[in-house]
Image (cartoon, rainbow, N blue to C red; front, side):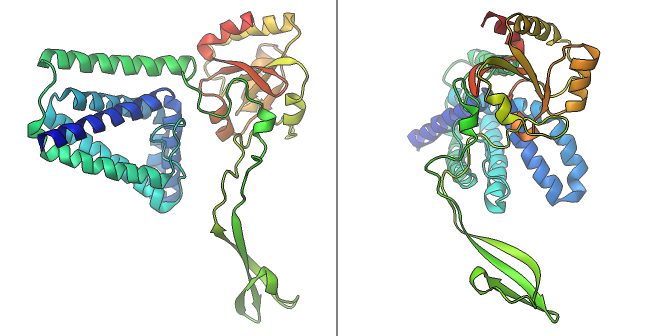
Length: 374
């Protein structure tokens, strides 16, 4: 029994640390996933809408805390220290995670749970099964915790836990200023955005069956495509029924459209330029103190080298007012869908060096000054 308990303890500890580290590379990714849950619950339970929206506003701090807690609990399990505290805490965490993944799997409203971030995407059902297995392993550890012996002295264990907290917080602070150390999203260096917006060549579409509801003389009937009624019937509704799920039938990059203030889609025109230029992604301009000087240097460098700078934002009115009315940069401003923006830019702001549709380089806001060297 002692060997089994300690094997389970090591497996659980390693998995929690690994899961936390993968998410720590991109805390914004977990925050966006939390917001997706909050939005679904706000829609499903209107009485909780205001509370869910409040939670959504603080998704990033919650994500940072959750990632830190996940790693520290894993470290505590490996060290074997404070066995009662850490075994009960990790049980509560896996119950919480199991509730989230179970809800996602059973409701069908959330496709992925973000358990291993964007680098190892798991479906909701896969995540739920993983949590059930971990739950069993944790129960073994909990009921056999008397067999857990601290690896090191109490003082060293405490010191290692403090160091773990400090390191994981510093790491998250670093990647939120710069960029994720491993880019697992479609907008990687060297990627061709126009090509990535297309459906994969080996895509297998969903097989659907369509049923139509028509009404005549107060009576409703359902028809298939092959037996539609004559014109004496009135159309009521259509039902789309999934017969067989397709495979690889979504483009890697979705909803990436650069729109002008008049609503014109200029994506093809901009990304087809046979030139080197910049895409400057900025979510909002409410606080510009920490990046305005770097952007000014970039703008002057681009102007000197005959390179265009395009602003990509989710708030066109404010961005256009800031860049072109108040600061006279005279740069084109494009609007991008908020969901696509979250995928394209993990820091606010973020800079792409482009040549045509190809991403030649990219920088987080703390490194924008380095772009003038390229």
